[in-house]
Image (cartoon, rainbow, N blue to C red):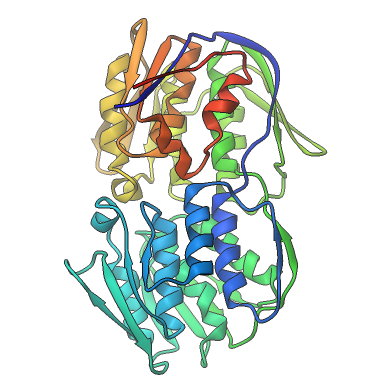
Length: 408
């Protein structure tokens, strides 16, 4: 298996990081663009493989939509095809075909779409068979599994003959991602109501507009973590806004307690060290993609912390809870479920002179563990997994002055 080796880097100087564009924003505006009558002017779309896959499939419109390992692309295109009367087969990698989609399919069927599973019920591959007419204009859908199901339905809702009302049941997770979807829809001329756990969208049309995608807060989180774990340094992250729609902008107040001061300036945000105040507990319900980053940061900065809201991590690119537990153990750190749903992060005890990290086909495992270079030499297996969201990640690491070595 290919690997990349990075040397120990305890300190660095002033470094500017040209962050990638947001995959989350890009994938949403691409679906909205496909649903808009007229020509939008989209700029700064993400270089992420997930987004490039979305662009290609929407442009080429093949009979078989192979999303590879892109969960967002699978869910968004399933709703897009099903509610726009397209006959398509949707499939992906073996892991993609293990990730559940039954909640979304059930909702689409209730609205009036015809869909069949081609292998296992509740999982891809599947075939959309058309949309003869709208059966329901109001449905209930669980909010505690994946916000992507909800976003997939919302983006298509304005074009349904009767519009759509969604009643979100249970504990609603990743609410910030739902709000992002709705605000992007508003940017393209669609009105909505979001009161309590009920979202209502009347029949209406998207309006063509110009839109530039913001830099990616998820990608920014790894640099916050590196600075928090290092002895000294200063980072400027390009393209981030204080009033971001992205839920992962929550990394700012989190890292404010873990030793990183953030100052927004024209064109981005400046990161400097400040005293650590500690993070006694944190709920990742609305920003689950930050969990791995924060876990590694706490492990390396000596902060024992309780984490909640990790339920959705089990059905990501890998079982991220299990993957974190295995890889943190290599540095003497633990992630223990001491009470149902409450995980305690026990900091690292003794870090070896070289640590080898498995990535489990998960881009965030590779990037979240990168800050280990502040304490030891690091080898990351299958480093190309970062192409899913941040293809230039390892090149950006070299901006710090480190020399990455690739091994076969």
